[in-house]
Image 1 (cartoon, helix red, strand yellow):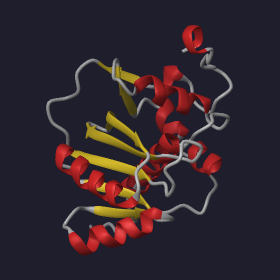
Image 2 (cartoon, rainbow, N blue to C red; image 1 turned 135 degrees about the vertical axis):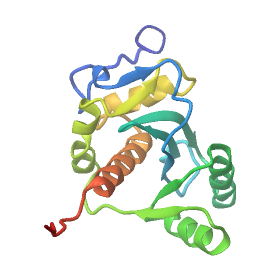
Image 3 (cartoon, rainbow, N blue to C red; image 1 turned 180 degrees about the vertical axis):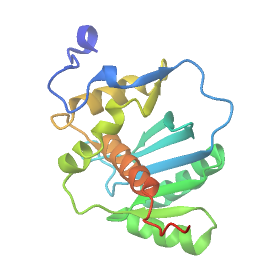
Length: 193
């Protein structure tokens, strides 16, 4: 990226460092759960944000990023893509941002299918939301592949945030990690003797 596209990745300006991500050459054979996190967009022009879908496989307390799709689709094609990726990965959980086109998508998928969709919403701004989950990345909980066609774009966006021109993949990552953190919190119980 630095030599050919004149777009070097800064190791110090972003909110995360590349060294915080663990790497895998081959993913585990099976996962306890497959989770997809969607950050949806409304418009399809290149100047607007895109839709991003991140697919994670969870194994022994770590989240393996298996696939990233960044797309600019009108709503009918976007809905078809949700079905296609859910079938491809046999998703156990599908997180969809509960605003803009995500609201309609959630309504349609709940009415028309048995897909395991969960609405995710945040009252915080993007920077606050991402900074709240960066410790999970630093702790080595997010594992990236050593090689993938989408990897360079994903790294550039995450390492460049909040100064990068797009933040769709960062939003999908934040939604997933925030949901994961919230779902793992245990409720207080009364101990019986």
